[in-house]
Amino acid sequence: MKNLFYIALILGIQLSFSQEEKPPNIILMIGDGMGLSHISAGMYANGNRTVLEEFEYVGLSKTHSLNYLITDSAASATAMASGVKTLNKVVGMDGDNNKQKTILEICKEKDYNVGLVVTSEIVHATPACFYANNQSRYDYEDIALQLSKHSVDLFVGGGEDFFNKRKDKRNLLEEMSTYTFVSDLAEFNNSSSKKIGFFTYPGEPPSKNQGREPSLDSLTEISLKKISKDKSFFIMIEGSQIDWGAHDNSLNYILSEYKEFDLAISKALDFAKADGNTLVIVTADHETGGLSLSGGNVNRSRVRADFTSGGHTGSMVPVFSFGPYSELFRGIYENTAIFDKMLSAVNGKR
Ligand code: MG
Ligand code: ZN
Image (tube, rainbow, N blue to C red; front, top):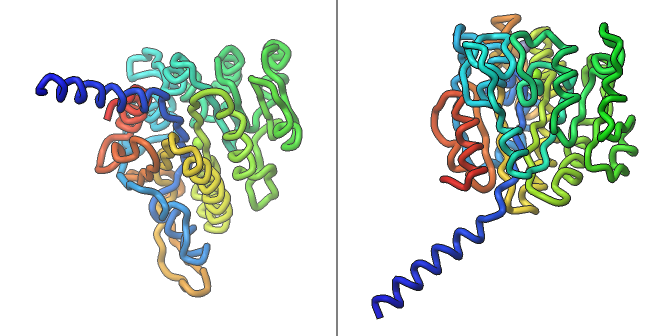
């Protein structure tokens, strides 16, 4: 009798393992420069609502870099992508210039589909830290060259000129023979290619206020449909220009970028709810602008804001999580722990 109990116990454990055998999908969404005040302003300007209220857990991330209390986007994306603190401006390397493997690359080794969708250039610091290694985030042509040789399955962003209008005269688009390049949302939606590149703009995409198309929420919806087709996936989706609006100390710029990012988060959350095996993490790389809400009217969806900086600040930033392993993201931790926690999820460790 006792033996039967143990056999049942063992079988039960094996059953629970096999149910979790398919590793979880991960959607990492980074609002560049998106501090708590940016979210609060976006929420009050949107009828006191944000989709972030639907998330299961909230944590706080410490954003300082290896050499400064105030990080830049490269050091902080390297921390989240690879789990190491590094110097400002460094992409995908530690403080001694050792190249780091990224969560995207680890997922690819585990046979995931992997993708990147951004509203900046695809070679900009935040996405670059998921596929490139360079001592300078501004070495855009080298970063483009590294993307051209990488195993990213799907990418969307601006910056095509770094691939086909280069100082070295190479045309990387021709060298990237395994990719299908699409040029608008309909082509993107209709393509059945396994590897897709979508350059939304030849250079830096304009702001939402200036008419940037396609919208990040449409891109998110279509990208998730494509990347989830046959296997588990990792995707990083960035609302890149919340930071740029804050550098400009323009509340209107921030609000329009945040509004679009909030809609994109809705698409990710809808997907995760329907799928059941998708972890969604929404966070920021740092706060920008030292933004504070100094007045407004809740009923009229009006906010007034003051800025204390034209650059980044050192405040912790929130981390919202939903889905399997989301409980790991509670508490206060270094930004490097975001990598550790995603790795735990991919390895099935709680
Ligand atoms: Mg960025
Ligand atoms: Zn910035």
